Image (tube, rainbow, N blue to C red):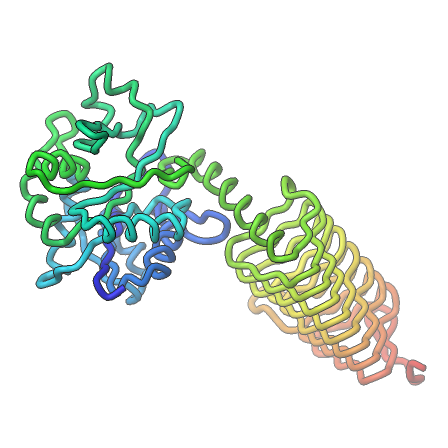
Length: 419
């Protein structure tokens, strides 16, 4: 959108996390919390996103690189002050500004698009997201006046007993005309109880000026869940994981038991693949069509699975590629391996990929047969249609020619070719 910019507030300490890592960098389903919010701004077409940093800003800047503009909130004086810090990044800009919190990974792109659409359609000066909850403790309450128009957001610490009974809450997502935002931001006064400047106070200021305020109610209050503790992380991960699994099932992937299946957010799985219970598939994994994965399988980052591949129980694959029709059915580990098509990986096979200093590669070519309990001490190469005998140890640097058989400890290549 040519007339849309975004500010992400990511300066908070997150003291309840009790961590050396900034809370916005804690991963949820394999991806930093902040990245989910960045994904939202990118998906809606914001031409510029400014992230306001504070606590341990150098670590967050290192993660962000040069992908977005960053500014530093030197003193953590509240959300309104954080937005003021970003104001210099939007000089001479006259469009709309979306404000999000960097610790809200459950925001849906569709919800934000709808919020912006309503903001523009109604020509509002400010529009913000609300939700209705049965237990609103801890959230800012929406104060409505004549005609049910929102006239203020009252933070719980400042709310009266009557206002605390209001069940409509502030989710923490706003869209403003930039000229209105920066004109009235300076009128926000410090909150005497918290000694901070609340961005929420701008709603009451705009209301008293007679400016137009609109709201959008989301049907899922969890969209605004901020990550402030390890418990919050677990809740967010549970919600996101269920969304991920639901999306895969809608795309034609069978997940037999969603309650025991963990799939990270950046995973791709082809149609008609079956994921059996107690399977963990981590960020960046790619799986083809018509595969069977699990039960009790772990696929780690960098793994690529072809079509019609079976990876069975108590198997682990890391930074490896398995070609079409290959089978790895039980009790095996592949690390840094390139496996061709129609290869059999027997029970108990291990690629010993780490020599104490470096990770080394294993190559297993098309139609090879790796016998049960074989240990491949990388780097090694198993040729096309070659075979390792049960319990064989293929030592470092060994190259087994095509159609040859290797047996024993250490492995020795037999003279006779495999039929």
